[in-house]
Length: 591
Image 1 (cartoon, rainbow, N blue to C red):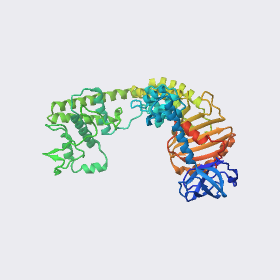
Image 2 (image 1 turned 30 degrees about the vertical axis):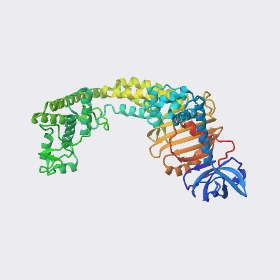
Image 3 (image 1 turned 180 degrees about the horizontal axis):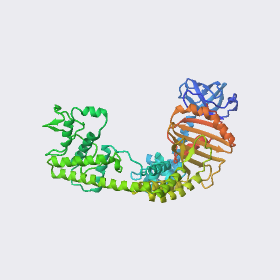
Image 4 (image 1 turned 45 degrees about the vertical axis):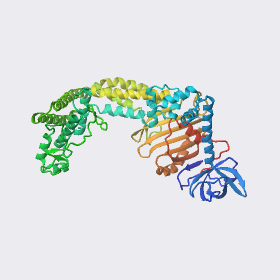
């Protein structure tokens, strides 16, 4: 069994062969650590710990301590002759380049850098380079569709429709955003939280929500951006003064509370839009001429709203529905607006801004009342509670629990069949939810169904599934890719396939695990974000070996390295071939 960790300066367990050199044949590949390097003469350490003097066929650019893959060329003068494997890799890249150029020349297409990139991507997916396929590639990689060449070639090879939904789903999958576990977990959290007391939002969040409501419900607001902007900012600061409870704030305001009160009232001036006070209190005898002029405070830039014509909402804050817990802030905002309208001489535009905000405050308070009544009725309805509880349990059963006690086998086909029937149960149940929750639940279910449908479409071309997992009570997503060796039309042969299992973990980040199975021999290649996990893998190889042995398999190859570019559905086959599909002469003795 080979165990290989690609960490500089680290010697890992390997094949205990004490006569490696006698088994070498020209063309075989060995991996060794460079001890001395004079350019063309080397001293290397093999996997059995022996030190060997060698001649280099070409200059080896490696430092002492580096690990290098060599091709054995033979012997000369009692020394072995080696060539860096990098030269062969360069030839492989050039071969792909030559093939792309030849394919373009055959159809009389200009051999430009862009066309070469498109042709190479198509050939990697075993798609013929034709005028039609190149035109399709150009359409998919333009600014509207925005796919990269390799993803565009995959879309063509998979025969997926190139509609905007599939393109967005593919991009989400490649970026790691398409996770059915997130859909399921979000739906469980939303449904379980129905009827529970919500935490109050901050004054800033409440004002941002009001701003979004004004924008949504009054599309043609005849108010300048600066007026509405400054008004919302001033309201935020005023309510913060009212509701700030930290000891530090109280102490800071103790000597100037009367000034703060006056500042809260002086929101708008007669001649222009609101002045903004970033501090919660302004010293009465302030001599800061930079921020004051003729007794007025210099306007500052507000982060809430921005737009030359009309106004928009701060996109860094996602506005959410207001609840009973937000009533105190809403009512205080209403009081501030009333004080403003009564005590200030306002322009018509300023009065219009106040009117729009006051209307949305009143509407929000009315809606909270209706919402709360609906939630109270829901909490008192035992029948609905039972239906919702069953739906939540149905969703939770879709998540496979992985812990010390659970050794059950995972059956992806069974899981997806259960997912389909479970969604039917859930869709019927969410009709009993209060309206404020129902709409969000329906959106999540629709997104989940859309994601599952996309994954099912992918399986017509490439065997890929997502599995919702709970590893020691932490939900995550497992991704399983399977590479068929031979015709894609054939069924999977469990005795001859390559699999990628990708996991997102909380403690050690992403783990991509390539597994190759041939008859009863299993080869593995782990790729991790954190090299600190290497020692854990090194110590765990015996446990994995024994576990596989109990199921009738033999672990023959165990390697691990740092994760550079994550493996995904587009590059999986290419990465698997590079890792596991070897030439017959390779014996791969790796340190």
